Length: 210
Image 1 (spheres, rainbow, N blue to C red):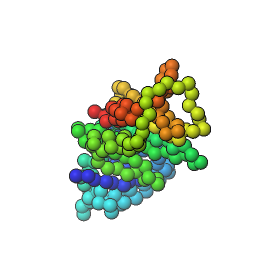
Image 2: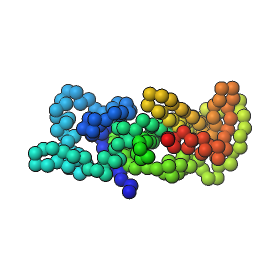
Image 3: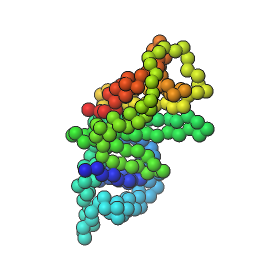
Image 4: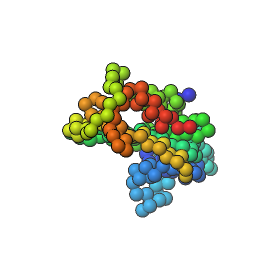
């Protein structure tokens, strides 16, 4: 069953403390406001908001439990050892950045995106990840492999990075530059355009996780 949760970074941090998280992505911590000045107020407000949203269930004694469905969504964020992401930088009059993070744990996948200062957290799977990768490149894209000397910076419209991290062990990154509707990959001694099939296969290989 698909489940979507919307939390502030502070609320996600509170949930991590409550669940005794093994890991938490620093990007989520960095997005928080300063909670150290009045930590007890932060805890009180976060708890009240989460109870009101039905994420926490509180009994008459003040003890709380996490909604089981919510718990299943959050576990990959706090206990998964593999994390991947798609980082998209759109170049224009105003540059914009969108990041899609995927957390993996015991066969479950959770996706996190940022929207207007909040974190949209939802279940995902391999099909959804592949569909996201495919959506980044037009179906009508027909460029072939070709080595070029340079890319015209004035015509660059997007930078896309696909990342995979295994906590404490390995990491992998593949980056692409889009210029005039064609994706290029910078290699050690060359710059090459890529086909649609190659782009999807290589990108999915990174972000599919485990």
